[in-house]
Image 1: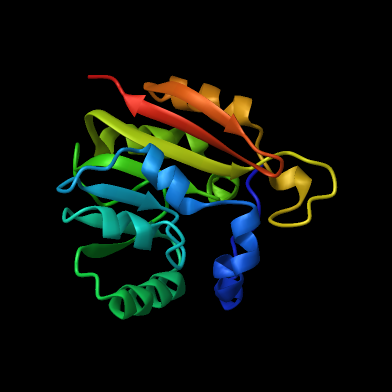
Image 2: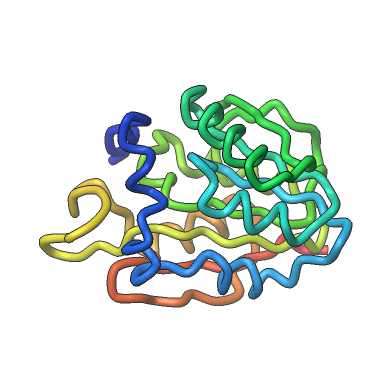
Length: 191
């Protein structure tokens, strides 16, 4: 079941230094082995928890995709503060993104799949937008009782469901890192 969408009025919470105890975007970005000229898609970019470190790793295009125009506006201001010039903004639902086929070599989908109505269709879109051999990561809230952060337990998706949906969408799952409150599923598109 998809949860309610995140309220853009609470965007500052997403960058709270306390969240670093849950997730280190830099370690996930490092594991994706980004090369200097790669194009990257950040699906559910929000205000840029991953967009900024991704854009700093490449001179290629970084496509920040989010359904909320307010979040893209906040992200745009942050990108400008960082002096980055390689970020483009796409307002879209993840089930239908207005980017071409095979436009990126990397993708990050962080803390958004629990909000998506048709996850399989969204993962099929990811497959379509990625070049052959491209890598990606899905970062999501673990299904835990009485969560301290993030959405309520009944709005979360377990790692096994994400793994199965990625496979059904034609993507190859490489590894699942289970944390206490979050997990990361690393995948690639078959060559």
